[in-house]
Image (cartoon, rainbow over all chains, first blue to last red; front, side):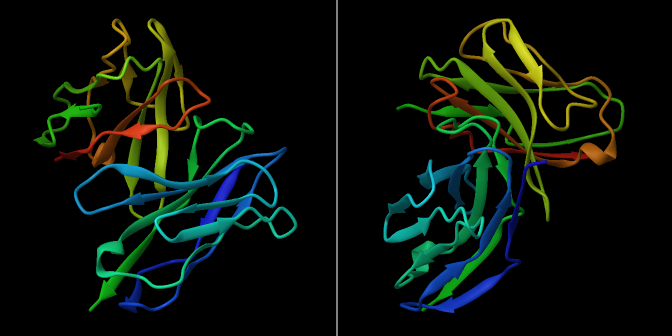
Length: 114
Length: 112
């Protein structure tokens, strides 16, 4: 079946540190991959996406590359800010190019301190 | 402002007392969905709707009902809530299955 595994949190960093949140997936076919962010008290927002192998999604300084050979979609940011503190969810859609029927990982909480 | 709204935002109820959580979107989206979020499990899809009068089960539909009589509204109904339905619920909508889902702010439900 389809599934997403994320590194457990919380991840605690100082401002301007480098961030990596690992995400691996299991899927048949050619899924689309996503990172969503949830700020305190809010719903999820799409952060970035990649719809085929070797695609790189990027937004707000965050990047993730769709690696089919390692079935991974790790989230990275070169210099985090306090405002990046949130919960980050890796997700896949079994349908290439499709957004619905999302399957989420457990989420990783990021706390950034000044 | 384009948005998905949910009501109530917080609800505490007792076992067996029927409740409805409303969801409304003002973007003329065809696709709507309900998720529940539980610690360590991420979000899991409960039900979804491709359009008016078209609904289908997601991954965890037991104990829930939905209806889609109007395009903008997609209420979630718990006929006889139980404590294991204590969770954070999110409604989402998208133009269709090919487009990004927009999430509501969430409803925190506690069943005692």
